[in-house]
Image (cartoon, rainbow, N blue to C red; front, side, top):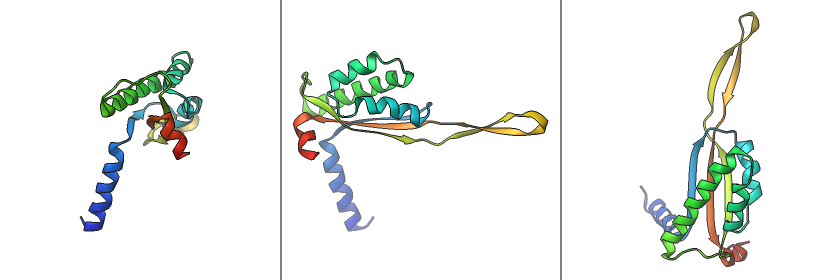
Length: 136
């Protein structure tokens, strides 16, 4: 690895030390369904978001709730204190596509229809409300 590449990698690692995030990979639901739930909680205070996710009737909401609890715990571990109500918000949340599983279903007259079983990756970043306002 070259010197400049190592320096930029070290710089990125230092910046990531201050960020509390959680990732969930290879969720077996389509990214479109997950984005609908992610849009409900984007930019919302974390305890309000937990309430929204708990009472949502979408199946993706349960997985996103677990991810949000993990991100809150990561923030508490990095800052060595408990998160208070109204202190944290979801600063960034995004959903990416995961590799598709491609299957064939038998169809009439000897044909085969392709079935694409989609999956997604979710990344959630939690930050204090004051920091999120200054960045925006």
